[in-house]
Image (tube, rainbow, N blue to C red; front, side):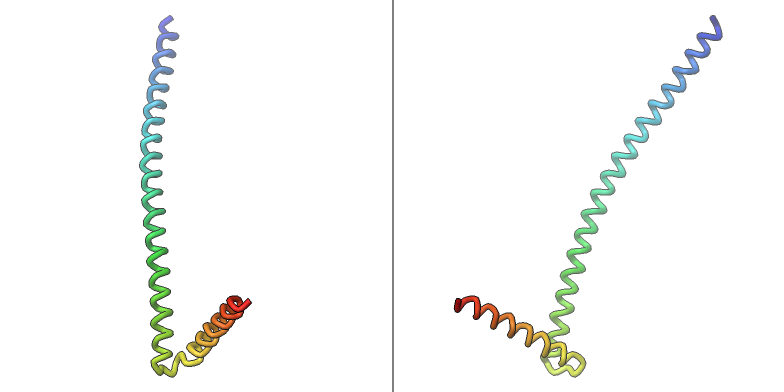
Length: 96
C-alpha cells in the first residue's frame, strides 16, 4: 500500500510540474506573439520610410539632371519622353 501512495504522490508531483511548465510556456508564447506584432509594425514603418526616401532620392536625381547636371541628362530626357508619351495617351483617350 505504501508503494501505491508513493507512486500516486510521484505522479501528482510530475503532473504539477508539467502543468506549471505548460503555464510558463503559455506566458512565453503570449510575450512572443506581442513581440511579433510589434516587430511587424516596426517593419511596416521602416518599409514605408524606405519607400518615401527612395521617391525623394529619385525626385532629387531627376531635379539634378534637369538643372544641368551632366551625369543624368539622358535619364532626364528619357523621363521627359515617357511623360510626354503618357500625356499623348491621355489626350488620345479624352478625344475618343
